[in-house]
Image (cartoon, rainbow, N blue to C red; front, side):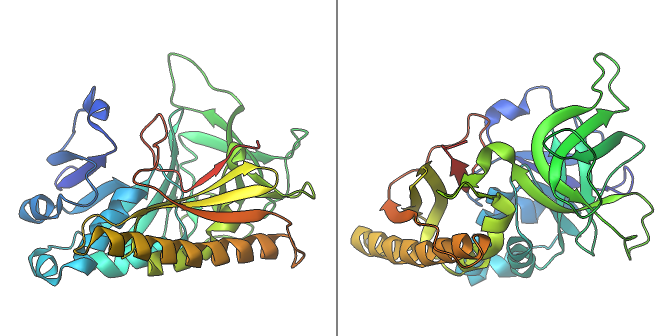
Length: 312
C-alpha cells in the first residue's frame, strides 16, 4: 500500500490513547481525531498518503467544502485510505471529490489487521499470504461466492496465539469472477458490517448495515446542517434518527437547531425508504422519529457508529 519506505504518511487516530505502542517505520506524523481541524498541519507536511477513520475523513472533506480559502492551501495526497468504520461507495466518492484525491477503503480487524484492500474496481483484495477468509452460513457450511455469510478468518502470521477458523462477527460476500484490476488474490465484493448491528423488522427479516447504507448519499447532501448522525433501532418497533447541529459553521443557535431538524427529516424519509426497499416494498411497520441532541455517544473503542441495533 505504501509503496516502500521513501514516502510520507499521516495517520489520524480516534483518540490519544491509541498513541500508546505506536511506532512508524518510515517518515510520518500522527494526529488525534479533531473533526477535520488538522487541515493546515496536514497541508504543511504534504503527505503522500493519509490513513484515517471514515468520520475524520468526512470532517476534512466537510471543512474543505465549507471554506474555499482552506482549499487553496490544501495539498492533495496521492490517496486517502479509510478504515475502522463502515463506509459506502457514495461516501468515498464524496470525500474524493472534496479532497481532490482518490479514496480507498481498508477492511481490517484487530485480530488479523488487514483483511481486504479496495482497488479501483471497488473490490476488496484479501492478502491470502497472511490470512485465509471463508464465508459460511449459520450452520458453519461454506457458501458459494456471491452469497452473503459470516466471515471466518485463519491468520497465517500470528506466532504467539494461533487463530484458526475464528469468527469475527462480520458479514461479507466473496467475488465470483476475477477482478479486472489484475490482482490475482481473491476478493470480497460486499462487506455488510457487524452481525450485532443488524436491524430486525417486526416480520423477523434482518436488514444489514450495507443495505441501510444505500441512503448514505442523502446524508452527504445534508452534511452542512449536521455535525453527526446516527440511526438507532431502539426496539423491534421503533427506530430513532439522531442528529447533532453542525458546530463549525456560522449562524444562531436557533438556526443551527432548525437546520439539524430539517436534515433529520430528510434522513427519516431516506431511512424509511431503505427499510421499505429491504422489505421488498412492503411496509416495515416501524415507527421512525427524529431526535436532535448536543452530542452522540462514541463506541467504547472511540468509533463513530452510524448504525446501532439494540435488538440484536
